[in-house]
Length: 179
Picture (cartoon, rainbow, N blue to C red):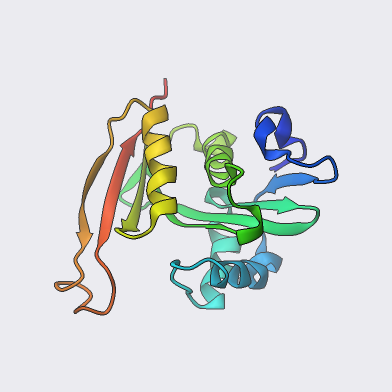
């Protein structure tokens, strides 16, 4: 799915007349560019390029790319949870430093949730480290838009699971208000 005029729905994205925004599902050709974008976005974990190729091919219906003037400005990766297919797990949200502060991450998330094949999604989940202020802000905004029914719990503990090599990951479980 390609949305070529997202500023109609999201007017705050269009900040300059010369910016042309496109939201689309990724494809296998996007893997390397997605990998580079994620590397520009600490504190995100940089996975292998192979992982990003798989996301862009095998999981593309639950991922989105935002392009500005034919350059990748943002990427969200996600997947339906195998044991809970009505739950969407958002793996990573990456917004190029040049395009932050425009509400792009929230709009990419909305773009995924509006897709025809994802109308049965009832819950969004993600994990966030304590210091990732951007992700906390994004998912609190999603939670607020859905009635503030979200719950946060420890998912992977720094000591118990990561043996001190990675910060604790907190699971944010957000029920969606959908009829």
